[in-house]
Image 1 (cartoon, one colour):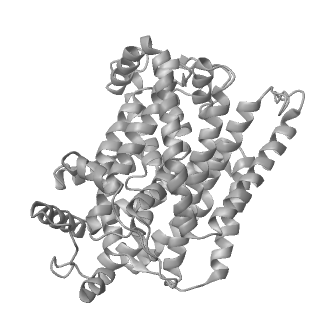
Image 2 (image 1 turned 30 degrees about the vertical axis):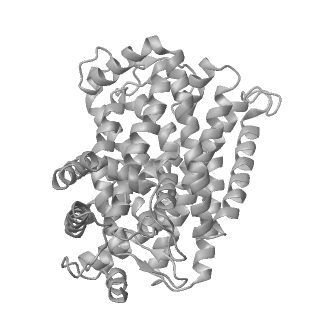
Length: 501
């Protein structure tokens, strides 16, 4: 099974997907005249603006919901894994992916707003499946994306997050009175696996409390938790950098030199730096993956471009702040390994013997600066990062299930989805990290392939919305949206809204 999973993963994550992700980001940046630079102030303003209603959540709640999905274990373990297999230069390519991906996020999230609809309970629903059907007219393609997202977000990707929670807790309490000496001798591997299973069950029960409360409870939970968990982690990274201030210039040098192949030790890994930087960049900030549009469609705004701006900011914040914070604290502390691309060869760099790639790098970095507290702090951060991401995955899967159900009430299918994701949380926590990551990568890759192809074809309405928004802003107006005036068809929700004005 493991060999089959890795084989499928290697096909999906071929160089073609890497090129397409970078190419799409560059194309949309040029098409929008680098709105991620020109519109940065507007992004920040709109992030805290907006209204909410019975049908939709506020712009900030939608941002928090999408950030809950973006700010998962990819921001900690994913960054560490990119460094381990791509070298420190992978961080530079994560930055590139984040910068270019902001424009990609604008396109996909604005499309989600343009073509959103209401479900049987009067709540806003939208996402790639909706705009693929309405803008492209290809229902079979839309159904393919919906199925892929239900499988990916509901069954493949949650295991990565749950596994990271379990591993980080095991790492943080290893050798303490709470967990005992979990070193494979006193307790044995069976006890470790039993503890991980127990952690998975507890996480599943907590998740059940949130997701059975519906989208409003998910939005409220994300709105409260996401800002605090991000701020706490970034502050900790800054503290670590201050403690290791003498190594900061060297750290920047390592990142840039290895990114362009000029570093003595990591120069031969330039190709891997690009591959792992883009791969983990997409996993972390999700630009182009098609996940952000689901939350974007749920917001109550007067113009679709508003939520496009907000979601572009989400990519900036995720990559430039949270991922960078993780990379800096690991590199500044020197608590990482870089493995040779040649199978069986000695590691290129070994700064943390005995620790597998992943969240353990960050835990060791914080522990080196604050002995006795570091591993536990990162474990807590990982729990909130991963838990909110699983919560967001459920919302994405439920939205696509609603699409397949034609927005009708079918409680049994929703119940099966909820029980399924809870089961996969338990499964992921109890099994090894490699299979969990491989399954998660397959899910991310499938969604990215389907979504990026779609938005490259149907990006025109999002561009029209951007120009219309900028035109109205120049006139001193609070922009409103009229799809008929712009020649945009099948934007049913906005057409009806305009008719009632």
